[in-house]
Amino acid sequence: MKLKNPPVNSLSLEMLTELVINLEKLENDKAVRGLVLTSEYPGIFSAGLDLMEMCGRNPAHYAEYWKALQEFWLKLYQSSLVVVAAINGASPAGGCLMSLICDYRILADNPKYTIGLNETLLGIVAPFWFKDTMVNTIGHRASERALQLGLLFPPAEALQVGLVDQVVPEDKLQSTALSVMAQWLAIPDHARQLTKTMMRKPTVDHLVKQRDADIQNFVSFVSRDSIQKSLQMYLQKLRQKKS
Ligand SMILES: CCCCCCCCCCCCC/C=C/C(=O)SCCNC(=O)CCNC(=O)[C@H](O)C(C)(C)COP(=O)(O)OP(=O)(O)OC[C@H]1O[C@@H](n2cnc3c(N)ncnc32)[C@H](O)[C@@H]1OP(=O)(O)O
View 1 (cartoon, helix red, strand yellow):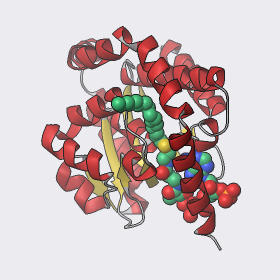
View 2 (tube, protein in one colour):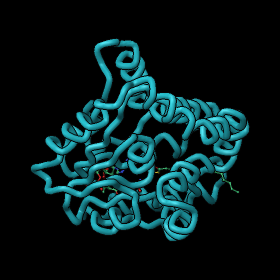
View 3 (cartoon, rainbow, N blue to C red):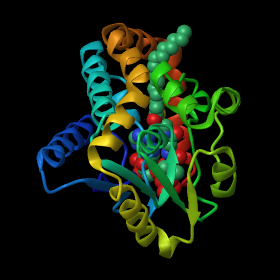
View 4 (cartoon, helix red, strand yellow):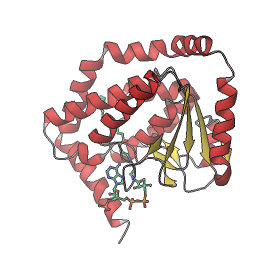
């Protein structure tokens, strides 16, 4: 599955909705057992959540957006398919989250392709289920440091901390993803799927139990004037970077 939402594959409401529909289609197709997630645009895997969905909108929109994001996370995190992320570009915040919910992550070796949950740099906070997903991957101490500092790791450091499973030359990314997929598909589906469910259930249950409260938290947090100002300033900085 190729992410395709120019210019930076930000996770807009429309993109999230399409991703969920496509995932459902693949899950229901008996001929499909695995999925490689990559970007149509080498250089950018995904810029994360679409900041335009979080700026200057009304509470009903924020609630709808957050619910769609939760839905996407729940679908992909619980997917019965083998999901391999072939990360061919920068992967900040929501882009990193999307990689973390896959079963295996391969990052192309390019110093520009940084990955991490950098929310604090925007003056916002990664919600508990982003944090849980990261802790499940790299452990508590490394997550605490990475989350507080909003670290974006270049490939060698991402590998060292365990945020990705493999770093490979850019031209070997897709072939490596396919051989990793073959290795995972050699395991009987039912045994692998039950194991995945068992490993991920506590994290899934944590969000499912608090879904509505989490939406309310997001809406009230993002509606604050101070948060709106931080997001606007961050967007301005992104735009000024060009000039
Ligand atoms: C008490 C506790 C309470 C807790 C309560 C918690 C509640 C929850 C709080 C909220 C939590 C939210 C979690 C958020 C997660 C996120 O994912 S936020 C998004 C973070 N993303 C980023 O920081 C990435 C920003 N982008 C970049 O760094 C770069 O764009 C890039 C991806 C590295 C690509 O660089 P480059 O190729 O140079 O492109 P640019 O020129 O920078 O960008 C092109 C245009 O795209 C726009 N853009 C970039 N990123 C985004 C984005 N994420 N959303 C929307 N738009 C984006 C950029 O502004 C450019 O636009 P134009 O200037 O108009 O062309």
